[in-house]
Image (cartoon, rainbow, N blue to C red; front, side, top):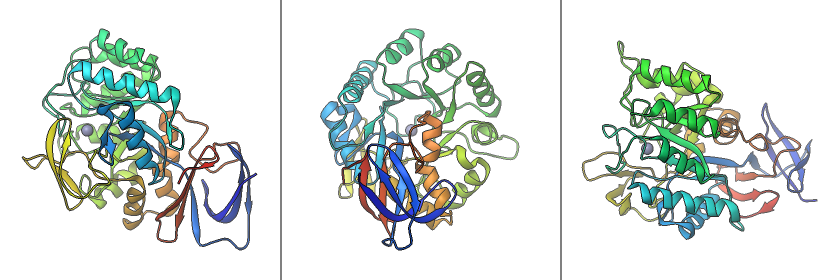
Length: 367
Ligand SMILES: [Zn+2]
C-alpha cells in the first residue's frame, strides 16, 4: 500500500504525519520526521472554461487537454464550464462533457460534470459572456438536464421562466448559482429562499463580479448571498477581487466560500492575444480583458489561488478548505475534500513555497 509523508493539512490542524492509502485513505498517523512539504486534499474547480489553449466549447479532446493542464496545478476534480453561445453549441459542449464523464481521462482529474454558465444569464450583465443570452424555458432546461452531466448552473433569477427552471434544476440535483444578474437584494434573497424551499442548494457565481455591488441603501445580491446559507464562488486572482474584499467575504461566509479559477484557454500560455467565446481578448500582467477593458475569464490556476489566499493572510487550514473542503460540501461530494480515513486518495503535495510537487487521483500519481 502506498504512503506519503509530509505536513498533513487535516480538517482541524496541520500535523507531521503519514498517509496510507489505496484508492482511498486507510490511515492517517502522526510521524516525527517528515520531508519539508505539505499534503493537502485535492483541489476541486467548479468553474473553469479552459487552459493550455483548449476550451470546453471545443469538444472532447479540448476537455482532455484543459483538464490535464489544471491537474498539473493540483486540480483533482473538475467541472468543465460552458459559455454563452447559440443554444445548439452549448448543447454540443454538454454532450462532450457527458462523454468525458462516462469515459473519464486516464491520468487526469475526475471530471465530475459540467457547469452550465450561460446562456441563462442577463443580457444586461454579460460580463465577458458573448451576447447569446436566452431565457431558461422548461424545454431547454429539460434538454440540458437530460444530458445527465450538468452539476452547476449559473442563473439570473430575474429572467422569464426562472422560477420553473429553479424547480427543474433543483429536482435534478443541480446546484443553482445565481449570477450574471441585474437582480437586487430582495430578488436574490427570494431566489435563494425558493431554491431552499424546493430542496436545492444555492450558490453565487464569481461573487462581486457580474452583479451589483454593495452600497449603503442597496445591499445587492452580494449581501443576499453572504448573509444566507448560500455558497458562493470567488475568482481570487487579485484582479477580479481585491484581497481586502476577499477577507471580508471570507470572514462572513467561512466554509460557504468556494474558490474557482474561471480560467480561459489562454491560461498557461504566454501572455498576448487570445479568444473567449469567439471574442478577442488580450492577456497582460495576469489579467485577460476584452477590447473595451472588461475583465474576461481569468488566467488563474488553483495553486496560485492558494498562494494568493496565504499572501492575503489566510491561515493554511482555511486556505486549503477554500479549494477542497468547501467545494466538496457545496457539490455534495461526501467522498472527498478532506484527508480523512475512507475518503478518496486525491492529494496535492506542495513544497515549502506551496508550489505543486505531486498530484494523486484515486491513489494513482498523475503529476
Ligand atoms: Zn462569468
